[in-house]
Length: 135
Image 1 (cartoon, rainbow, N blue to C red):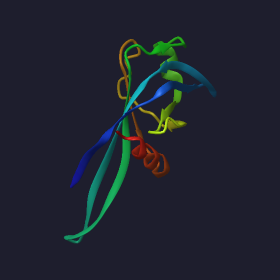
Image 2 (cartoon, rainbow, N blue to C red):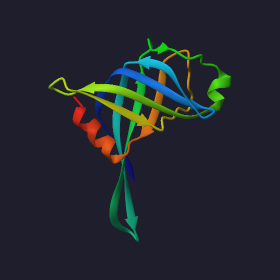
Image 3 (cartoon, rainbow, N blue to C red):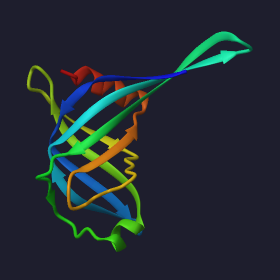
Image 4 (cartoon, helix red, strand yellow):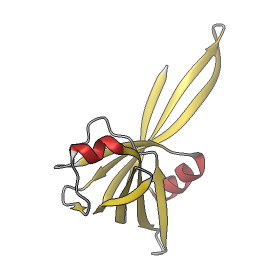
């Protein structure tokens, strides 16, 4: 059995989306991202008895509709993209700013003329950091 829990949302500043194409890294958009963190837990049973839970942290990222597109986006470019990442700043309760990077962004259907939505699996150290910033 798999359960998914919404752990909360946070909002970043000075977000930048980078895409890699033809071994080059391009800044394609500047934004204020909304990041929702989820925990997916899967119960693994062994021969009918309760085994252990495998937990996976992932996030959903929505870029606000007024993102500033700084690189030409068309189907030819999108077809050559091999990697996508988000770099953004976030401030804690003491107004200390930290820059974070979420790599491995994926999107089933990227509508580059509207709101951009991505998902990414979070490595443990990054998941711990993001959970600290949840409001």
